[in-house]
Image 1 (tube, helix red, strand yellow):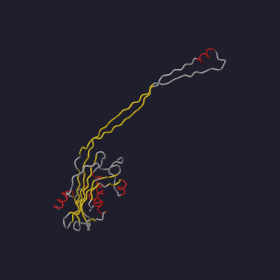
Image 2 (tube, rainbow, N blue to C red):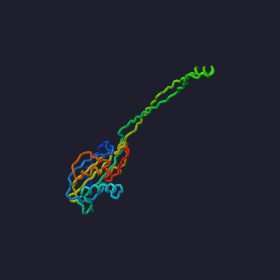
Image 3 (cartoon, one colour):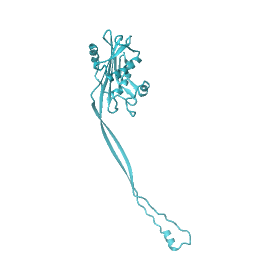
Image 4 (cartoon, rainbow, N blue to C red):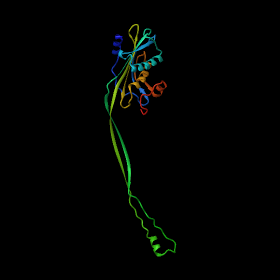
Length: 242
């Protein structure tokens, strides 16, 4: 087992800090895989850290991995009957400041002061009015007050610090008979304060992204749409607005 761990830990690469996760409604991560698909695919899963064997979090993540392995043609069995020992490791690094975003907004409004008033001149056509009434009818006045409209605008700028936390998963398949590695997969990503989530929520998506590359040679950034992931039984790990 010590030999397996030594091989395993030497295979873990440095995390690449890329602002990838949860772009729109598509999940993206970095995957590097090496090796070939074995003919015999019976396996059992162990943690890279033996103290996590009975850890609840490890068991949850291991179950996610087993589901993807089984879908890829592998079959779980007892350690004494297995052809492969699948070693699972994962980590969450330190949060790092990556910059500040600036958000500006402008609001505007108008205000009108004063009013307009007027009286209308009238012409009296009837002949039976007395002189005073006739005089008042012809001397009605008109008054006006000018209305004034002013426009105002207000600009606000907010600054928000952005942080990223590197996360990673490494999976190593070791031949139980030769004690040599058969294949390995390394998955790297970041959790960003701009699109908040948790390692636990992201883990199933990381393993699903890596699934097509078990036992292959690949280097890239695979994607899974939110719709496709949900059809596979995954829960979108980001707020609905992201």
